[in-house]
Image (cartoon, rainbow, N blue to C red):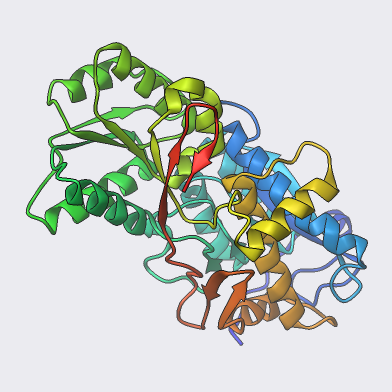
Amino acid sequence: MITRRQFSISAGASALAGFNPARAQTGSTIILGQSAAFTGPAAQLGIQFYQGAKVWFDQINAQGGVGGKTIEIRKMDDGYEPDRCAANTRKLIDEGVFALFGYIGTPTSLAALPLVKKEQVPFIAPFTGAMALREPFSKHVFHLRASYNDETALIVKQLTNLGLKKIAVFYQNDAYGKAGLDGVTLALGALNLKPVAQATVERNTVDVDGAVKTLLAAAPDAVVQVGAYKACAAFIRAARKSGYGGTFYNVSFVGTQALADELGKEGAGVVVSQVMPSPYNASQPIAREFIESVKKAGGDARANYSSMEGYLAAKLFTEGLRRAGSKGVTRDGLIQGIESIGSTSFGGFNVQFSSTDHVASRFVELSMLTGDGRVRT
């Protein structure tokens, strides 16, 4: 068991959260803290992830919870802005949440990471594939998804196998975009290639005209996009309006359904790499389970890749909690519980954890948007 430095919080905050984090979890509710975008141009990412997680937790709570304890997500909106995320994280920790869960994005997750390490709070399933959150290894951070390096390697392999070697990169001007650019550059470098052009968009904006002009001047065969759905949709529309006839590839963080909704008919042929099992493929047990759970839940939840990731992240947390023991659950116990999962399958989605490897999956596949808002794998 690792040693965890005790940290002080107010008595009022401890009462609110139902436990003193320096001791075992007490009370009847385990509270997770989530800082994510629930408003702004990236809002659907936070909303859909949260909805998927809530479908699972509501289902578990209706069955009596885990060891008699129900699970609640205390969510805070950061608008996909790092400073707001850091402030939210400080507040959530001070209020005594048991663990941090389902943070959305690289720049926001990186803003939270120093507090995670300082206060030694479990940080479960951030919605990011950035290597900066994986290396160096952190005892407190657990990843459900494959990395952006894994995603971009498959994208580059697919493009070059098709004979498309003039590859440009449109990326968000922050740590997320740079992580994706690095992945593309690394994969191309292994083939003695490099991006023919690159251009950026600022986070939470759709000012893409300059990027379109820069990239189209290089006449690329394909454009790899590393951004959120509104900016990527704006780029695709503007590029096509300017006469570009090449292919667009996106990494999973774009928000597949949100991108499809933004583009409508213009989405036909746009490719997105996926790190979760398809929520539309009924041949997979996890997809059938998820679709049925969403139907039973009713409400606003929809079956899509982002909500599937929230659902699987919630299942992962619950499994770790079960293994931590029902009496006197501690943060250290949760960490050991997740590590003890080893190799297992969530309905066909294989995960693997150990005390030295906190990345559950390296699974990546490609999907394509259709002109009627659907996703084909």
